[in-house]
Amino acid sequence: MTGNYISLIPNARSLEQLASTSVLFPFSDEALQFVDALSASLFLSPDSRAYPEILALAFWMRKANLVRLKQQMQQRNGDALLVPRGTVFHIAPSNVDTIFVYSWFLSLLCGNRNIIRLSSRSSAQTEILLSAIAKLLSAAEYTNIAERNLLVRYGRDDQVTTLLSSVCDVRVVWGGNATVQEIRRIPLPATSTEVAFANKYSLALISADAWLAADEPTRSKWTKGFYNDAYWFGQMACSSPRLIVWLGEATVARRAADQFWREVARLLSSSKTGFTDADYVNKLVASDALAMESTVSILQSHDNNIVRVWLDAPALHEERHCGGGLFFECAICQMKDLRPLLNRTVQTVSYAGISAEEIKDFVRSAPLAGIDRWVPMGRALDFSPVWDGFDLLRVLMREITVD
Image (cartoon, rainbow, N blue to C red; front, side):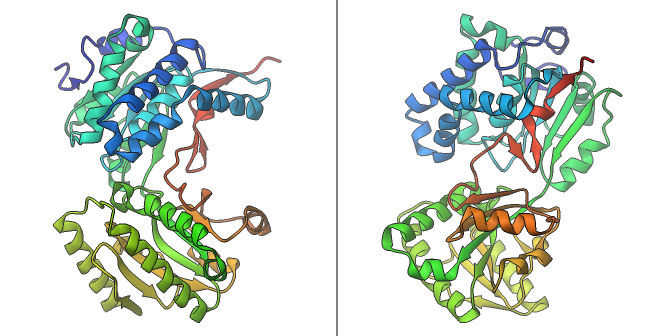
């Protein structure tokens, strides 16, 4: 225990020592080797195999992908002279166990020193990751990484957050709106900056005609992709679809929807959701409350792992959504009918049966008030250096100009 926080890495350096240590070059060999080594460790771990989100993280950390990230960054930035910003303080969310690693490693690859505050709520996934990280950081070949990174855990304590914020050049906050607002009250050094990822709402867009015309392998691919998007993390990740929008005439959309949910229910019958009794109760309360205040239809589902609420008019109903397999649905005739739904809280649209060119044409036709990313169904939870419209590899570095 140091300064009312618990260091999660044995023999970690003090905050003062970390702050006085030099930064590394962006995409240094030490950083690349460490990230790739953790990837290999997770792939070999029997414990990791029970958690697809950990395997997805390990796949993202492969050296081949890291080299690709470096090449993409160089292409976007050309001859710009970029250097690390210094010390980055990451405040991780409690609802997505792997996000702290993505956030940390992007900053690490940029060459920064890092302080990572994990939620006081632990999980099996977090402990698997911490065990593998601690083991690697204790190895002599990763001394340069160990002395520039601090992983900590503490409860709600503004004094500790103030202390850690006082030495950072960038503060990265992942959490709900209340968390972001609470952290923003805590001052930063005058030369520091902040990036916040607050509550976001995501949806799926499916062509009804394309679903009805699809062959069995295509339907299976879309269904499995939707399951991964919606049911990992209990539908509580910011990019998990909560509203399902069917593109097509209303009667055709309802027919496609009924077929689609039968396929999802069949997949769920042989899969684990991890839902608790509270999740099932919350869905019942949320759907009943929405039925009392809006024109909706609560559709019969095969079991309580799926609760469908059909909306006569497209709407987000953000305040009523509790995750856990609760899905709002609606139909629209044209892509342009999406526009009234959009605001800055809309993050990801996962799509099926629509081409990327159609989407690009839609985006180009007029500026969008919302939507940060469009991804094929099954890739909603794929992490990217460009998140919520921020290019993190660029945000976490500083540009020096020479005239």
